[in-house]
Image (cartoon, rainbow, N blue to C red; front, side, top):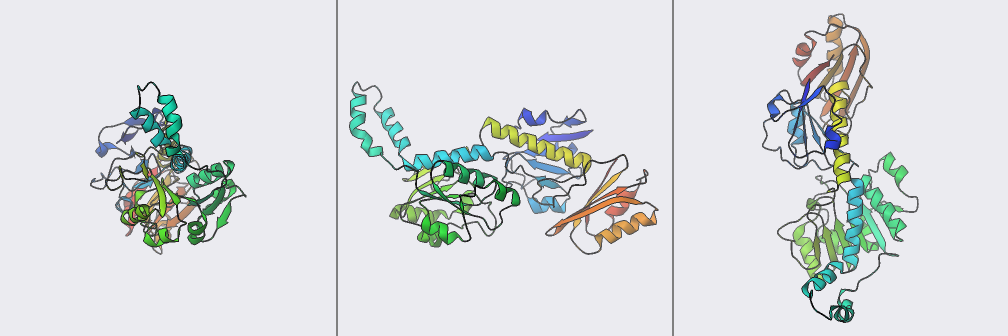
Length: 387
C-alpha cells in the first residue's frame, strides 16, 4: 500500500486516477509521495520514507531541488499541462494593453446611474482608443509548450511572429508553425518587435534578463508581457523605462508591491493556470508521474533527476538506485550482484548533472538484503526494490 499527501487542493480529476493500492494521509512522515501546487517546502525536514514530490504546475521555485536530490527524492513537474490556459491569458493581456478596455470599463462604472450615459460615452470613448494587434510584430522569448501555443495563436490573429529559443525541443519544433521567424539572438526581437512576451524559466542566466540594457535595445513604445516569472525582469529598470515611455505598457501575472497600482502596468493576480481545465490536466499528469515512478521505477518530467524509462516492470524484482554521477558506480552495482550469483536481465543508466539513476531488472526472485548492501556503496543516495 502506497500513501500520498496533498499539501494544496489537488483536482479530483487527478486523485481519482490513484488505484486502490494508494491511500491518502495527512502526515508527511508516512507518505511515499507528496502532491502540491504553491506550498513552500524550503523549510521542510523530509522524512526518510518520502520518495517523490509532484508539483501540479510548471514552476518549482517553491521546492528545494538540490536538497531533495541529495535525499533521493525525485521531484516532478507537469510541463505543458496548463499551457492552453496561460496562452489564452497572454492573448488577453495583449488585447488589454493594446486598447484601454479596463479604463473604459472603469469609466462606465464611475458613471453608473446617469440617465445620459450612452450619449456621454460616445463623447468620451476617444480617451480609451487604442491600436489593433493585426499586422504588428510579436517576439516570443522561449518556445516551450506555452511559447509555441502563444506564437501560433498570434500568427492566426494576423501578427508577424518572431521566436527565440536556443534550446528548443524536438516536440516544440514540430508544433511550431513554419511561418514563424525563428531568430538566433535576442537583439533581433528587441529591435524589431512591437510586443515582447517572456516564456522562459527563472534560471541563473535568465533572472533579471530584462534590465536597463535589454530595455534600451527595444523599440520605443514596446509592450512587454511577462507570464513566466517575475524574477526575469529587473523591476527598477522596468519602472525607469515605463516612466520615460520607452516601454508603453507592462502586463504581468505576478503582483509586487512596486508594480501594483502603477500607471502603464496591468497586474493580473497569477491567474495564468487558474482554470478548471488546467488544474485538472496538471493533477492528472502529476498522479501519472507518481504512479509510474512508484510502481515501475520510471522517471518522467523530473526536474532534479534524469528521465529514465525501462517500461512496465515484469514478474521479477526491479532494483532502482539514485546516486551521484561519478565513475564506476555501475561497475560496483554489477559486481555486488555477481558476487551473490544474481543474473541481470536488463539495465539502464541515465545522468543529469551531478545526479544519476540506474535501473536493473534481475532474474533471481530473491532480492533480500540487496537494498541494504547497495545503500552502503559511497555516493548512493537511495535504493528501492520494486517487487
